Amino acid sequence: MSTNDLDAFVSAVAAGERIPDRGTMFNPWGDHDPAHDVTPEAPRIRTDHLHRYLAARLGRARVLLIAEAPSYSGAKFSGIAMTSERDVLAAHRAGRGRDYFDGRFTRTSRPLAQLKNAEGMLERTASIVWTAMTGNGWAPTEFVLWNAVAYHPHDAGNPLSNRAPNTRERRALQPLLEMFLALFPDVPRLAIGRICQQSLSDMGIDASPARHPSYGGAPEFRATVSGLRQRLDGRMLTDGPV
Figure 1 (cartoon, helix red, strand yellow):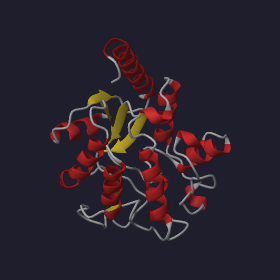
Figure 2 (cartoon, helix red, strand yellow):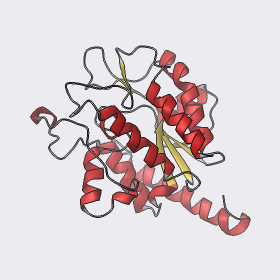
Figure 3 (cartoon, rainbow, N blue to C red):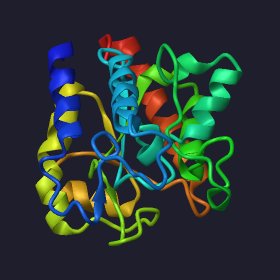
Figure 4 (cartoon, rainbow, N blue to C red):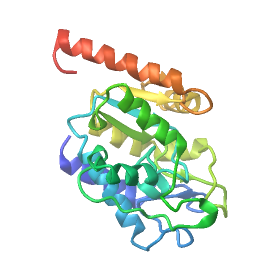
């Protein structure tokens, strides 16, 4: 896919025109959370993060990992699915910022004592996913993280809550998922967790199942991504590049 396709996708995500109810769904790339964002420029910063993250993986990705929806501690502030600010900032301090994308990363969460985010917001599932992937030999640009539902579903009046997206939201936002998948044609997909697996199946989207890494599922998740890498490496040796 071309950079024009990527531009169109990121623009569509940032516009948020398909969100059914803006009172219960937050668009990290288009909405400003005045209570928890450190600056009104936060949506623009997150959009830039997303664009650079995806651009670094066009033509390089070997697997797509798709979860159900963003959490308030992950993409809501980092702008990248299944990725938390604290991990990216730590990577930059260690000289590994290019694991995510070239250039600067800017946190957008306001440091607040009740959030315990002095070093950035932390999403533990995101940390497990990144560690499992890189620990099984995947280069950071070989995998792409996204969600079946692009935006953060929350309870009305409580932007720092998580809830499962409903059927109406999944159907309304399916075109964005299809635009994302079109950026990476013929790249194998893993659906993380049973809820996501059922959601993708209901939408007619093919994906292999992967155990959700939380609640004791990390070993099985690591085994799945390790096995997939071995199969892809074997296929490259026998059939050429995947």
